[in-house]
Length: 88
Image 1 (spheres, one colour):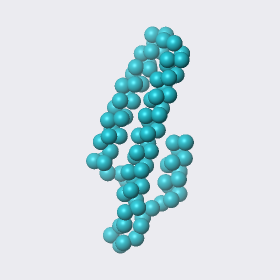
Image 2 (tube, rainbow, N blue to C red):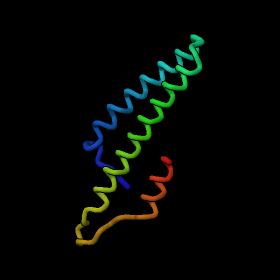
Image 3 (cartoon, rainbow, N blue to C red):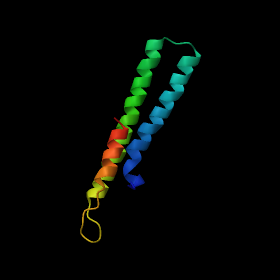
């Protein structure tokens, strides 16, 4: 499933924020910060990654459901199911 990169600008922004969060989490661990604080930040980064993944899949789904040049729907249900389950 190919996804149009132009439709994913918000996903890229989200991933860049997550990248910053991960840097912060690494610093927290290096500084010996409280375990609960580290886990809270890890959970936030994980949710942001999941949302980015679902956005990529939903964007791809819209593109896949569109009719191809022959007028037929070109959706691979098994592939979409595998992608959704990979985020579960």
